[in-house]
Length: 228
Image (cartoon, rainbow, N blue to C red; front, side):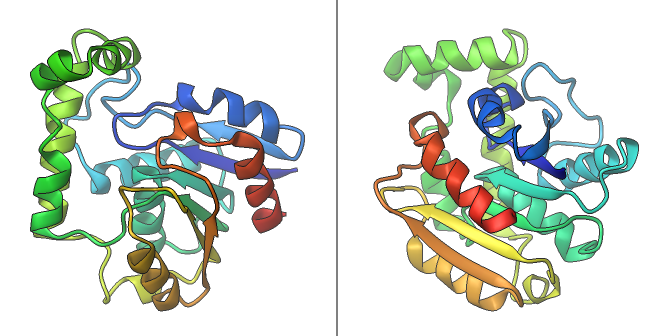
């Protein structure tokens, strides 16, 4: 059975994949992980960001003998997978991303992070703030938000996926994007798919950005069609 690693997005955790895992387990040996600082996982002393998360992914692959496993990365998880593949394409198999922002600018990062304030969240979206508190723990949830904002600003100043290293990703990569995704642009996704040696872009009708609102049957079918 093919091995598949699911990577969560920013402010997310492995627990968000429970429903998707149940739908995929008949076709894949599914593995999940919490990046450091997420879902109660301890904070990594090396820092917080794409480069550290890529190192963690590599360590998990080595530890559990998952070399050659395919990867599905949601949002930030897709960026992590592609960044690792740029330096170690032979470590992993096929890559599928969903709702991954692939083109970062300073202006775009400032816009994205404007809402990443835990105190503002408690005031404006108390239910979501409570969810993040439950997901990451009462001692870490605010830190996760602030550090995520810092990570995005760094990406805006110095993107890690560029015209120089994207062509080094020789893996088969499928970039999925919901047609109703308001956080990620279709043009940037299509452009990166064109730059990748084995890239493909697929737009999925009636699909928004938040994973909680994604139709899992539709996502599951796209993953099976792409990876099997």
